[in-house]
Length: 130
Image 1: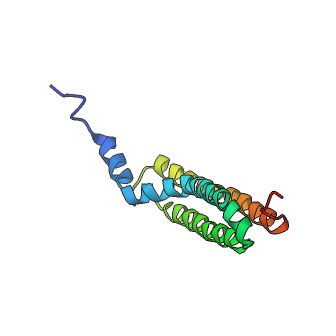
Image 2: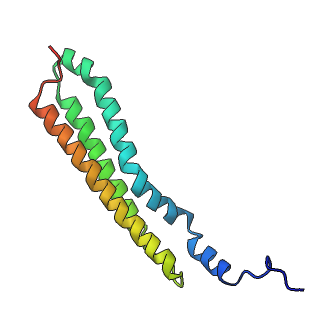
Image 3: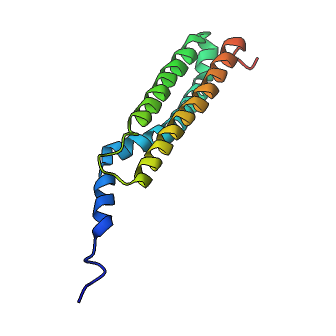
């Protein structure tokens, strides 16, 4: 009797094509990393407003923002480099990897643009409320 669970035919090939945990992690980091980094940067800059206002050193906010901007670019680059499918992978896997890589570039671009807008706002306005 032939069991349906013993017939792995195409499943084993798809599993072998997706069994790249670091490459999959790179794609997910490229998509989810930039928004999480931007949120972290936003919270850190918000927490530093009062100390920066007291010390009159706006440069600290710019340095934090530029460092997080570099990290956002790095995560987008990591996601883009995870796009290469393994040899012999099905076309669906190739399409999904290309889509996720393009989405990581879009995520990087969007949140880098938001971060640049925040840097410009910090440079033009005083962080001190009074």
